[in-house]
Length: 101
Image (tube, rainbow, N blue to C red; front, side, top):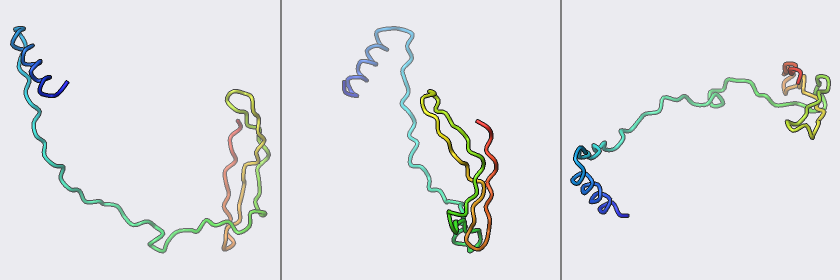
């Protein structure tokens, strides 16, 4: 059904059945005005911040192994959550102990 035939059908309905009020066309809103971003450049460009690059993965420390079971109960995985990693520049990054499953 085309737009014109739909409008004709609506007009006939309004004229045949009393009590219907004619519909008003939607107002024209026009184009949306332009906006200016208020963001800031990323911290990597400012020269500040910490580089989180691991120096050697063999130096990782782990929490005690945890068994995780899939939601359907068919699979069980034993994982060792990471406790601490060594960063480039003699830094350490320590992770919190995970909650029990």
